[in-house]
Amino acid sequence: MSLRATALLRSPKIWVFTVFAAVLGLVLTLGYLGGVLDTDAPAGRIPILWVNTDTGAGTISAGKVLTEHIRTGTAAGAAHWITADDEPAARQMLAEGAGYAAVIVPPDFSSRLAGLTDPTGAPAPPTITVLTNPIAGPAATGTATGVAQTVLAQLSRALGANLTTHLPADSPAKTGAAQVALANPITVVTTPTAPAPAHTAGGMAAFYYTLVLILTGFLIAQLLHSGVDGILGFTPREFLHKRATHPPLPIGRVQTLLTKVVLMTGCAAIAATVIETVAVAGLGMPSSAPLGLWAFSVLAVATAGVLPLVLLAVFGAPGALLATVVLVVFGVPSSGGAYPPELLPAVFRRLGEVLPMRHVTDGVRDLVFTTPATGLTGSIAAVLGWLLVSLATGVALTHFYDHSGRLRASTHELSIPTVAA
Image 1: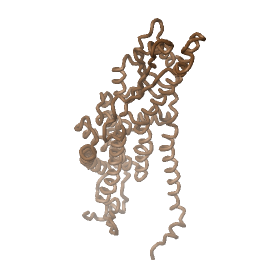
Image 2 (image 1 turned 90 degrees about the vertical axis):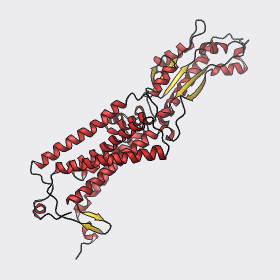
Image 3 (image 1 turned 30 degrees about the vertical axis):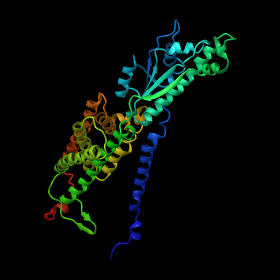
Image 4 (image 1 turned 180 degrees about the vertical axis):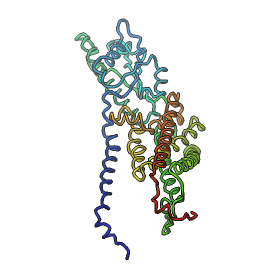
């Protein structure tokens, strides 16, 4: 007589999975919601470049006044202000990712500001330009632009109030349209350094491409783990209604892991080729270095596959959950792809510096877009480090299992004559 579901459900042991459900719900909530719910409060962390090229008007330099405000004045804590020498330098720094926006105070800023108080001329309001880099992504550029515009609006009103205070009481500039212009004298113009390339999801292509690489490696690892173990006889092989088993083959944990790693490497090369071909040739995603992107993609897929294989070899079934936490649950929110690191809570900023996904995202961004790629070497080293350390740890621990009598199969299973797979 076969066992019924009602009898199985009466066993307390079967309900242990509800504990796993609670743990999984906790981890996913902390990972995804904990990583993004506080991203709208930069608290002075967002990097914005400041360029003052104002030549002044006589003894007055309004550009210096504004610069002092962002250095030590009321606007100092609104952002992480980084001074650049001129506009070309600021554009270069934006391309390198040193900032997400650049405020450019023009050479004629003071003279135009002074012209607003001259009733005999036709005043031209002073204009400040805010440069953005769409490649940084909409969250980074949007936040930086919003902070810059808020600060400039406050400084504009302060300048206007100061100008009005020092005008004679009967000055024509205190009446009519001139008074309105003086109340808020600065015009802010926001412009991108260059439009985001087509087929890049508004600058988000690097993040989504990275997500594809990580998920591909992770899922291939699950298939290889169950598939190879089925061939070796450690787990049953099931397809539709068919189920096949046979005694485990006489192979140790180290050799099993190495077999899976070699297969993972081959699968990574094939998967990376397909991913880049479809993305670049099929969907039109740009690539500044196609060969480099392919090589880095192979490395990323292999790393995202070897880590789960090692965790599964060392911890068994719970290793899949650990790999999910490292690569997906905490890897995605801390990657800096959807939100820049400066907007993330402190714990996710630290996790991003350690976990592999942020390094993959940074490397892919340098290889997809035309950037100076100053951090590409560091990204490659970090991802390669994860691959090598994972593999070395896995080999060391499985070697310990093999040589300490911790057999993967029971004595009864090993005593059964081996049948061809």
